[in-house]
Structures are given as structure tokens and as C-alpha cells.
Length: 578
Image (tube, rainbow, N blue to C red; front, side, top):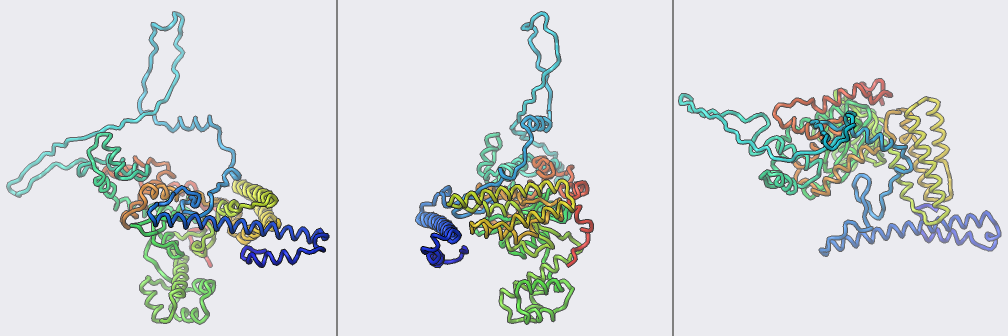
């Protein structure tokens, strides 16, 4: 019984198998029971789905009536990257796949090593309280952390001169980093609270007023917007350095409201950086824009483009028409649209989009002056497919499909739990392979995969899910070819939560400029954290007027030489061959 088969047909099938003979035939009786149990599961799943839709519609109706709805009701739940899911509960597989953690004592010792000592103070014992025979045995050290929050308001007395010969007044300049009513520390602290602390502008103003700064939320808004052009340039340099640092990248996205309109925040990362990019769409062409650091689009027609058109199921007549256009040359978007309209004026919008997609992908793969991503680690969303030479699917995301199965039959629960245990046992074997990869072990693991995902349990929903995983064998086992890539996309999903927390507090930027500001600050914050750079000190250095710290992009390039994130791609400097 397939998941799409009408319930009436399934019931008829079962009833036709039930007769006097079948009750005496053990095998036929077992088959009837199997069909009945799977029917129960199907009905139960449909009931859960219908209940979730009812809860969602009830919430929407309540909102329209002015009730507002309960954001914490059973009908909604938060997805891993912050997206909203309906009628499901987020379940983590961390317990099943995690490895032993370091001891509490070792973590405590590591914490002490990270504490910077600003001053030392010797505490003496009142000798009058000591016995006569007490001997000095040295010192026992105790480290106490504390902070000072106070104003540093300065009245600058700027010398002023007037020259009658020139008719001009000459003033002493303010120190570097100072400008307007507030110094660099107020600007930096405001950015820290806004983007690392996820505080609203009125709350930031309230905190500063409690310290003694006279400031309004409107002034906070202006402070947060100052200097963004310089940081935007740094953000673009971070992305360019990050893309060049490894032949593989991780990508995910989450929703963002911009001026009340639904948009999408793309999170691009590897172990050296994290970059955020908010766009109106999240289709395949937008994904390429993100991987090209939003440079102007270019289009190219070649054999790869024609092959993509066949994969996109574009008619042979249209492909033949496209072949009449010049090959192996790059066009801007306007040029390509014009040539396409002249050659094929009667194209439907859908076909036109497929041609543009194919030509954009072909042009991206042919680039030589900028880094081209060779492998993308992501989930199985369709917009990620065909964008890069190879695709590595996230094991945690694939495993989530098994977690979402909710069998109500005891036998099916046992079958699911048994398979999930084998699933995560195999995952741990892949982790072990990454630490000591060999061609022989890779062959063994591939055979184990084929055996595991050829399992047939009799629980139809589980068997269908196992078959889908088997279809993704090549993408799930990319780690056997490239042991350095991660088995999951947690880095991108966890980075997406930074945007989720920000939008929970601030709902969304009110303009495209505000969205760019969010992207820039979150990119600097996420990258600084990965590189071990203090976010506050980095911003303070940038607002000081005389930067002393190296740029994050320079640190990425420096660390990329040491780490070598793509040892399995010895010739990665050259473009991919198709």
C-alpha cells in the first residue's frame, strides 16, 4: 500500500484478501495483518496532519479576529534553522550520534587559561591572628572576574585660530575615532548589544542611560548605521577570502521579513568564516549569486548548458534554437535577454527561466578569475542541485526524516528504533573513517551502506524512507571520496539561528539598507568568532580611526594556508572539467 493510494482502495484490497481460506493460511493471514497495520499507520498519519492543519487554520482565524493567536500553541514548532513547521515537534538526534565529551575538570582548566589577568593583588593574613609557630607556605591563587561599566565623558577644548589674510577659522581636530556627540566605545558597545546581544534600540538606549550616557533610541539607530560602508567592504572581502579558502562550502537559508515582505537569508560558511546574505528569492539562480559574492550575473552557452537544458526537459526544438546563438562567450543579463528574445521570441516564461538557469550555471562553472565552489554541503532542497560539480547531503537532515516517523503500532516502533540504531552506528563508522581514511575501508563502508539501505521491514513508511536514502547514496557518501568534508550541515544551520534570534527580537529590518546592515554585522560577528577574534575589540579597532588589527579576510587567507581544507582536491586552483 503506497502512501498516495486512496484509503478506500487500500481497504478493498485488504478485505479481498480476508476469507475463510486466508484465516487458515498462515502466510496469507500474516499478509492481511501487515496490510491492516500499515493502513492503521496511514490513517494515523493522515489524522495527525489534518489536526495540525486545523490547529494552524484556527490560529490564523483567531489572528484575523484580533485574538493574535498563541505563538506557543501545539500547532506550530520551530525548525532546526528557525523556519516554522506545522504540526511537528523538533526532535534532535544528538544523543544517538554524539561522542563522549571531555571531563568537567578539563573544561574548567581550559576556562582558567582563557581568562586574561588585568591586575594582581596580594592579600595578607593578619599576623596577630596566627599562632606563634605559623610558617609562610606561599600563595593560593584565586581568579575573580569583574567588569567596570562607567562613563568616560570628555570635554575637548579645541584651539581655535582666525586668519585675517585668508578669512578662515582654524580648529584643532578631534582625536581619531571621535565624531559627533559619542565616542568610539559608545558606538562599538551599541553594535555589540544590537548584534551579539540581540537587543532592540530602545533597550540599548536604556542600558546606556543606566550607565550614565544621555542618549535616545533614535540616536542609537543613527549610531548603528554609521560606518556601515566600510564594514560592508570588509564583508565582501570576507566572503571572497572564504570562498577561496576551500573547494567545498556549506549553505543553508532561513526566512527574514524585510519591510514586512518575506525574504530569505542565506548562510554560507566553512570552518574559517560565516557569511549572511538576504535576498528576495531563494531559487537556483539566487544560490549562484550567493556563491559568486553577488557579482553581476554572466551567462554562457556551451555543451554543459545544452546538457542542462535536456535535464530540465526543455524541448529539442527550443534547444536547437538556443544552439543558433553564439557559443563560449559571456553575456551580461541584459545582453542575454535581448539575444534570447530575438532568437526565440515566443518562449514561455518558464522555458525562458530554464534557459537562463542553464546559461548561468555554465558561466559559473567556466569562471577562472574567481573561486568556483566544487562541492556544496547542504540539505536536499532542489535549488542546491546542479549548482556545483558535486553535492554532499547532510546525514543529520536525512536522519531527521526517520525521526519524523511516528508509528502508533508497537511492532513498527520496534522496527523503526532498530533501524535508527543501525543508521547512527553506521554514521559513527563514517566519523571514524574520516580520522583514518583508506581506499579499502571506503569500499567496505560503501558495501555496508548498500546492505543497510536495502533493508525491507514490512513497515511501509519506513521502507519508503529507506529507499529514498538509498537513492541519495552518491551524495551521502561523498565523505568516502573527500574525508575532510563534514558529514552534516550543522555549522550552517546553527549559524542560521543567529538570524532567527535576531528576527525574534527585532522582527525584521525596515529597508534593504537595514537588511544589508544585518548581513554585514552578522558576517563580521560569525567570522570573528570562528577565527578567535574578539568582536568588541575588532569593531573598536575599526571605529578608532587608525585600525591596527589585521582584517578578517587576511586572517582567513593566512589560516587557510595552515589548515588546508581541501587536500582531496590537489588541482583545485583549476576550473572543474565537465
